[in-house]
Image (cartoon, rainbow, N blue to C red; front, side):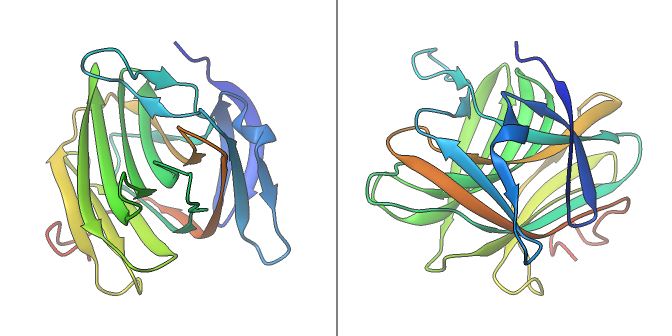
Length: 209
């Protein structure tokens, strides 16, 4: 089980006060206000149903939130996609512990496509591939009204596409987070821009608005 440690990294309107796997040492704040998140090869967060591919070594920056109140986390992400970078991605996280979490990712698949991916983990991971996108950057959003939690993506931050929705069964105190992943070869440096956390929720969970 990973230990949550203290840190202080500010980006957008968020101050990330916690981390796992040394995430505070993997980030750099750029002059234009963006956050650059570097991930070495072989680091991932996944609980394989058959146990063979389980890996919880991924560095993740975290901010605590009260799950009894609404929240919406948004970021524009630009992962480093490479020819050898299978499953390279930029992620948003909902994290309770190593066995209870969700990530929303812009990820490279087995065929070199770049697509939206969600992974919901309750003991083991439920991994889902979603839409394929021919862009380098995308907006990701996770929103909860305390009862429902949903994940979205948008190209322009205006029209949102819902990719996953389920009952919010997380405990009272959880973390939201960001990360860059590189489960296979090479490395992945992801760029995060327009990072924001608000204590409200989307008014229409189907449209994400």
